[in-house]
Amino acid sequence: MSDWNGDSRDRFGHGGMAARGRGGRPHAEPPLPPHMSPRPSVPGPRGHDGYDGYGPGEVYGGGRGRGGPGPGDYRRPGGGRRFKRMIVTLLVVILAISVGTYFWADSQLRREVDLGKVEDRPETGSGTNYLVVGSDSREGMTAQDKKNLHTGSAAGKRTDSMMILHVGSNGNTVISLPRDSWVTIPAFKGSETGRQYPATRNKLNAAYSMDGAPLLVRTVEYNTGLKIDHYAEIGFGGFAKIVDAVGGVEMNLPRAIKDEKSGADLRAGKQTLDGSQALAFVRTRYALAQSDLDRTKNQQKFLSALANQTATPSTLLNPFKLYPVMGAGLDTLVVDKDMSLWNVGSMFFAMKDIQGGEGKQMNMPIAGSAPMGSLSWDMPKVKQLVSQLKNDEKVTVKGNR
Image (cartoon, rainbow, N blue to C red; front, side):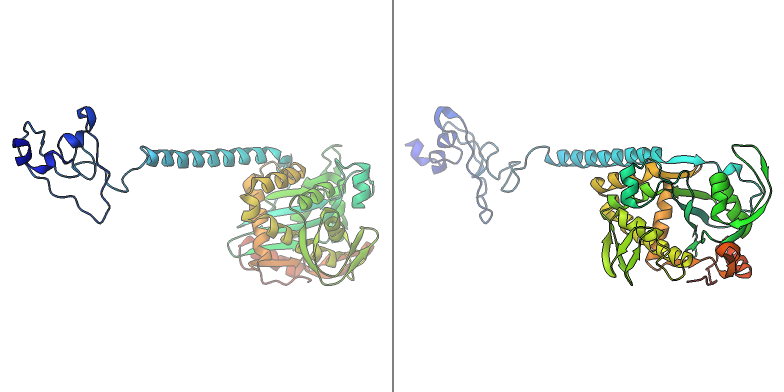
């Protein structure tokens, strides 16, 4: 009788033998639904009938009892720690790739120009001045490459385009220097012959053919009074490879261009130029009204469009695009010995800003024609322009556009 007179929970599963299952082993009740609350525990003495003082849902830690997990509390142990480790690992991998890419790309630069050899240099001004040169170098090109790109097979190399890029706090400015500019090439000592050569008047691109990049830099500095901080040069083949590596460059041409000498055969309107077409476009001069001046305008437009397309997150953050572009361009880019990869990036982003309207594009101010079909500079305007660049002021001088 005593078994039936006690609390009925002893026989029907709330702490009694039934809750322990066969063999006296305890087992937990399934958790109660969220809308139900367990009945309060009923204290009582631990007796021969097996009552142990636990209430419903509190069978040896089961259900929602004291310390037992409730609905929604069943999480995989250590899940949060594993997630944190995954994030840290991912960040370390990204950092390692970024650092590795930087050092790899930096090692690709051809630091071949020693600006320390340049004599009688002007004083340094504010901002940074780059002399950006496109040469007609055919280095590394096969006979088929030369045929496809319509470059011819002339030996040596000459300057095909020249620009001063000023990067400053009051806007960036790019100034094209017509290669037919009539300038003074100062006296110099030949880097290979050791001979002393007197000063002479000639076209600007003659300076490069006489004694390479150092004499070209000295000639630009001598005629402008502006110190060149860095030098960058790329040849025909490298230029075409970069354009192809970025998938071509979109241009909107105001009119059709056909030039047998450069190989240009382009329709008017919006189109994407591949490497061969782009090279023909920037080299075209005989199909243009003002020959050298119109040519420099096209070069500026194209380089700005190239920079605008290259310096984008879709290229810089995508290794499948970034590596081909760097591989195609950096090993063909000849720079000065102090040029860093950071400086190269600064050049591209400055050109991108100019394309976006945050800078100025212009030709060197021209006064008129000169001997040998060349162009003379408007020196009063040139002096005003150089003064504004040296003091990092906003450029107000107008060139020949």
